Length: 151
Image (cartoon, rainbow, N blue to C red; front, side, top):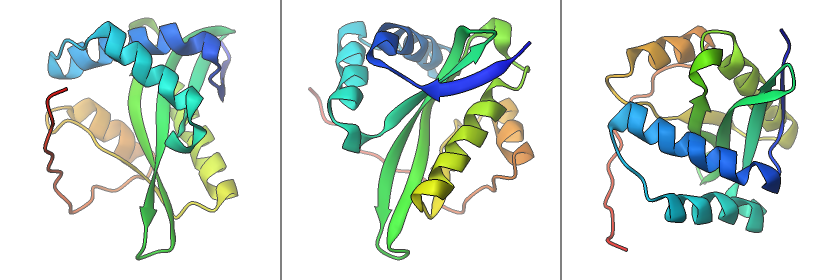
């Protein structure tokens, strides 16, 4: 079994949108609007400043993805790369798919001069937290707050 990663292409939009639907339901029991999600994924390809997706393939078959977005840090005069929208199909979990995706992000971030990589995780998702710690990531001392606007 070989796991590789690549930049996502527009041909991947439908798969990425489907994986995001699955991830939102599995992690938060949140049902996303498929049409909005399709537009949201497509918008990343329309405006590269928003970020990029990576796709993982197992023996040539797509089995997962993640999104990288950017956050400017005036304290460090550089970008943090945020890993978001992580999904690995159930049949490929615990096979190192996320590890390969993370390593690809890390390599690209270092080459681009990013100041670090961040991600957020549900407080109850202890399995993911162990995975991230196992990759050398450290828990931050920040809490996240948000305000959502009706659309």
